[in-house]
Length: 208
Image (cartoon, rainbow, N blue to C red; front, side, top):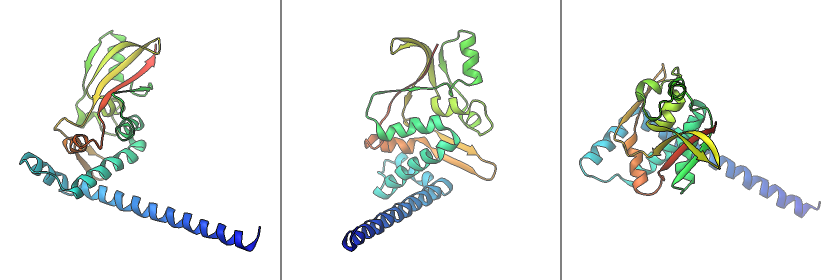
């Protein structure tokens, strides 16, 4: 390799490193902003604006977008299935999303299936969402849902079906021991209305 080629390779390496550093800085700022929105009263102020008929600012909408993305990212450690479903709101424009998994089959779901009790299943969110709850994955991903038998890909399956949207005007609290995190779901609905997030029907299933 000649000196000229070595210089070109070195320049490319420098550009790549600068790009990685810039990306890490942007991600760091986004995560810090997300943390600020989780622990400050910014969400409360946005809810007040919406309830009074005012529009959110570009900064507020951008912050909500980074907040949702941050929750999705950290959520892979807390509840992978719910994080995967939420990421679909960014990456898909399908009206129905299928996820094959058994991780949503909680004790409550298992009992309903065993007793042949099909239909609506719901959870007390602020209780079932906690880290120690055996219902955590099902509740975070599917609350509320319709438990049913379906034929998917020509095979009999057990499925939980729900509308994946942030339209419900509710507040969820996560008690993590050292802190309490509050999330106003209706704020993410502002992103749905602007087609930043895409709502869909979620079908979690497994083959019988």
